[in-house]
Image 1: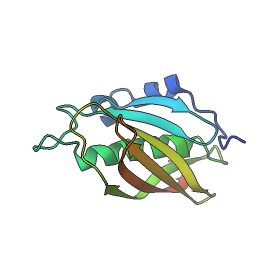
Image 2 (image 1 turned 30 degrees about the horizontal axis):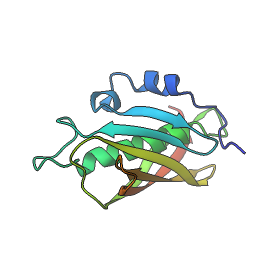
Image 3 (image 1 turned 180 degrees about the vertical axis):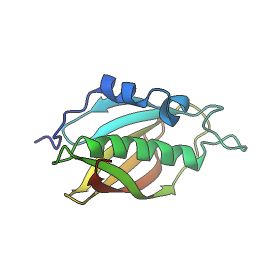
Amino acid sequence: MAIWTRTPDLEQLAKASANTAVSYMGIEYTEIGDDYVTGRIPVDERTVQPFGILHGGSSVLLAETLGSMAANCCLKDPGTVAVGLEINANHIRPVTKGWVYGTARPVHIGNATQVWEIRMENEEGKTTCISRLTMAVTRRP
């Protein structure tokens, strides 16, 4: 059974992300399932740290992007918005080229908070980072 209260659409997610850190870093949304959103980030001059590996902050940007967009498609009250409250990331394996793919899945979808797990892997399917994102659900300004 799908978790969405507002069905996410790849084109709408990309449009909402235009001219933001998401688009400037090259993040692309790639798939939406009944309980997940996936996307990818390139490993290039925009996203690496000085040693030539994917910057941890780039992984966190991908994680928060996927989790946040997914969270806002699960809101029960249309007068609310989900905003990031806390995020952590465990960087497992370095990546020096190609793409890193992330998948956001819910751990908890509540009226006041949501918790999302975002798993990232390289093009070979090896885990590169695991992140947990807590979202606060609040009234729209």
